[in-house]
Every structure is written in C-alpha cells, then in structure tokens.
Image (cartoon, rainbow, N blue to C red; front, side):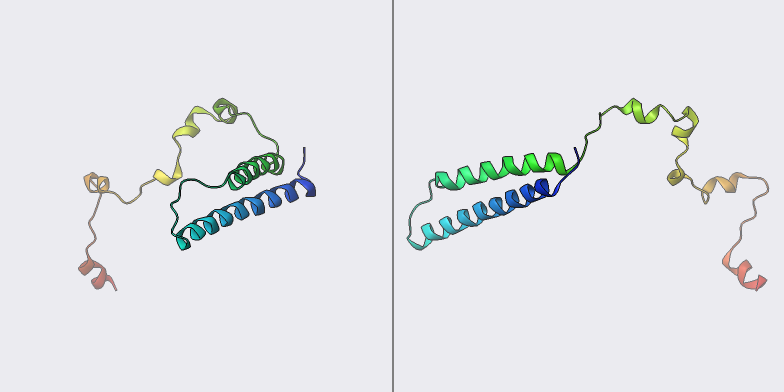
Length: 117
C-alpha cells in the first residue's frame, strides 16, 4: 500500500503529540521543583499521551516506510558466483613489502630520484 498524505499527516500528528507529552513532562518537573515538592511519578494523562502517540507513530510509519521485504540472505546471494565473494576491491594492496622478495626488484631511494631529475 503506497504512502498517502493521510499517513504522513498521521506520523506528523503523532510526533507533535509525542513532543507535547515530553514538554508537558518537563513542565511538570519544573513545577514540582518550584513548589519544592518531591517527584514520585508523572501524571497519568502525560503517560497515556506518550503511549498513544507512540502507537500512532508506529502505525503511520508502517505505511510511510513502504512494503517490507523478506529477510533471506540466500535471496541476494543466489545470483553471485563463488569467485565474486572473494573479490573485494577494498582489500586490494599494491604497495606492500612482498615486492622486495622479487629477484627483479630494484629499490628506488630519494637520492636516486633526485639524481634522475
């Protein structure tokens, strides 16, 4: 099912409601500090608003995110050959100390480079 404007509006309303619940919780805590009262718990209306907002956001995101795909590792790997698994270009190393073991290797020093110029 494609995401419609209504589903995006539902997500937006859910986030606004969740932010309002968080602001109300912070305002409640500051009220308790000003009146030097002990904090025991949040009022039930703030807790209910936060939980309902969370479920509204989850409902809206399920439609906005799009169709879900199955999680199968073999589905993506079926088209690849065995040789392509070991072929990872980020692990290619061309400048390593193994070249020093070659019988035809000639070390080029900085002074040799300066003389060539």
